[in-house]
Length: 486
Image (cartoon, rainbow, N blue to C red):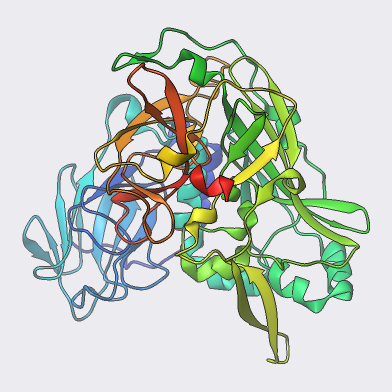
């Protein structure tokens, strides 16, 4: 089969991605099931595709990417393109073959639900799955997940071009509601007059002209949540009341003029001594980027600022009883002892600019915690000694809001944390002073408590949800509360 020659288009990626964000119910999607582990995907991972065209290969702009260990996978190996109501697989590589259900395709071929795609002889395999029923619509995918997929699939092929043209789109999440943030040349020019380095950093970020207080507009109404949550004989009702849905908005302020440049959601919890605890990346999210190390430098800021420049976040946290905690990043105790690094930028003439920035080193993830004192008293207690001495196989309980689940779910306007469980993967702490656990957490669970149940059924906090393993993603890193005492 051969029809019109394939050509990558903005409408097929960015245009289709925007449609999936703002008009998802009339759109369909498919899933690629990875059947071989790689640096970027693990075996069994299901990758939802919400745009009309993607490319598969080793190139950085490919939406389905394989690492250099797959020598027979070309940089741009194959594409999957929407054709009417169907999807077709297109051969791009001139040197390495593509197979569909074991048969070599010469140019392109239509895909059917259940097909198996293989890139080169003995290369990686992927299953092609088309959801049915209520799950067939892009609208069945949560908004925060669609925002993440938009960045990974719609923007990825054009990242460099967009940066060069200074037409970047930043999508922030405020209580599950996405909004666009627009660029302000006047504000950036003011920053340049303060220090040229700010332009080098902030040109990667879209600043908004109109002030948006996302949480005031979009906060869910509280209906109380449910009771009677008992898991393996442990009653979670009291613990759930001290778990808070966290919304953060990051600002840069110059001479009193305030601009929001990004936002995110997460989880926090309240201890019995009045400490509000979360992950550091839920407080200073602009220092972190989990999606792609290549753009890490685009999301970091200098650690010191002139007196007239301030960078900070404002945080609102709510629990299922309707209690609110309002904080700013300035109120949190944070460990900055191991995260300084020099990053080289260049000015318009190619001269190097060396900027001291915060990029947490891979061995320093034990510092991914933040604590602020409040006037409220929670019911959760921390077991500091146990947190540093957990045994492999210990059962752990997570309560939080992965991908904003538990916040306004369905037709209900509620805030009620979601239960999850996992196990300790090794005795004690690893080299980054973290608790290693089996997989089980997800984005939005970050900052939530890691709990263990004692013989009496009483729950104790032993850790804070931090991140998944960057290499295998089969394990998660939990920051022990022991580190907070240091």
